Length: 293
Image 1 (tube, rainbow, N blue to C red):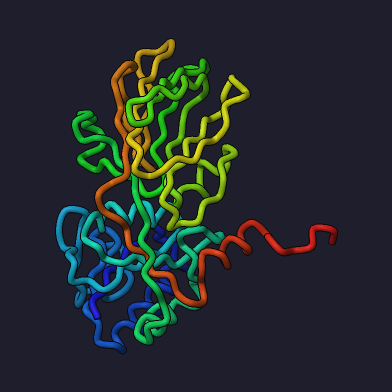
Image 2 (cartoon, rainbow, N blue to C red):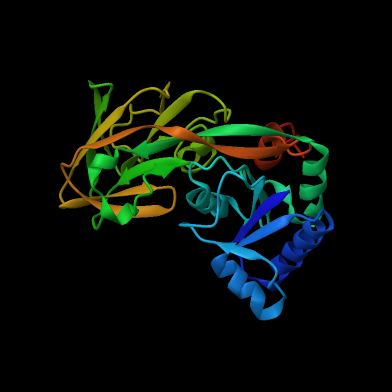
């Protein structure tokens, strides 16, 4: 077994569970690699000399069986920038509030290894969206894809922007709003949901266009096929607007054409039999509970 370990959480209570995971992996004689910055932090208080390291540029390849992310959903979004198109399956160990991506309880972290060894899991492929690489946006540092969503939004102003939108070269509409979210099914439970978008099952072959605080009140979230190419052009009072790919943000000149489509690779997520998407949905949204109490 070959396992990569990553976290952005450097609190002592997180380290307790990281060390439990490492102990369980060592029992299985696993080959372990730890993200370089997190490895350096661990080295200050714990012995980690026997572990190799990786960065977002080197140290990971398709020979790894599992990538374990400690933190919340945001940590998993960051984890995808390490995994990229390598095909390494990701599992999230939640160290805070229940997330839609990071669902495994930290108190049961040893089961991550035990259930993986028993084969009590499935691999779920999550689609991504990407900005056309020809868009020339240096701030993205070559990472043009997003697991949750790509969003265009206003910058340095309280005024709304106009987002001229085309689907497969056919004009759809011009959203007059604070911005527009292009969400994957995975991202449907994120920013899009908070802006009124629908919940979509993660393996559905669709994308969602969700306007952010639209002025034209007849503008509603739109579900489209994931083989649709989306073309956007933003105008407004300022010279620039923002584009965000999950947690990565860049400034883009108004009037610049942005082409968005489904990426040509997927992110593999490990879904344990005990931690399904539907179970998470019920727990997170309190479905099935008697609200009269």
